[in-house]
Image (cartoon, rainbow, N blue to C red):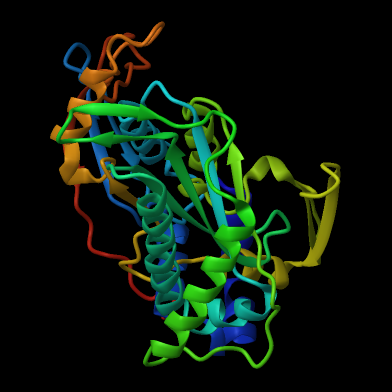
Length: 356
């Protein structure tokens, strides 16, 4: 059992009473899912051994994208899909961040803000690509909502292979290994387009104050797989892994994190309700897609992506990636050690009354 979920189970009523005005439907659904995950309230898988007639039932995971204990398969599936798209080129990670003054909007109007961030970031990347070359680029955007202290800190990471493809000539043009785009120029355009998008949005309003200089990063990350592995750790495995929770008392929770500036391990101590809310505030609105592909990496560009990979087949020490074999769930009978057979899933009625 996840330590966060166990705390949530013990203090759910106090949490509701204390944060009732801030708990929306998305957060209630996330809490309901996590509290029923791998319990008798969830659906059950039925297993039978044909050799000794031994029967077992095992509760299923909830499958909620914010549950910290049941998204391993989802993480691996996403990572495998990204590996199939890898090219033999250097990759860069571009990061767009909103200033501190905008973070209150992430708490009050998260869906509108995050959608706007994706739209603007895509426009910025497309604009820079069109100014520097005439060809097709591809990139993957991933939304993160927190910093290492787990405070609200919305930012978008963009993984970009360094190069572009000219479809009419069927040519791949390799970019510079040490440089993609100027960070100051990226930050300036990001700021201008965000402000313009806010002014045109029907519901979002700009903060009264915000800095004149914003921050964007553009960092070389090697050959791509390392960057995708880094992002996968934050996509589907919850906001805070159990291994980072170092102490729980009757009143408080202490967890560790690595400071982004000093690279030193630090600790943060919070009262239990504050800790639970710190994690729950990162629950995303229903229907918001937090990972998006563009250019020749988008889902409906598989044919184009295969053309590019075929063009690059002669690249030294590189072979075209292939789909990994999908393994099936296996259980061994505790009585006779033979492989058991899954008979199906008992579809129980949805749990009611856990939380409103």
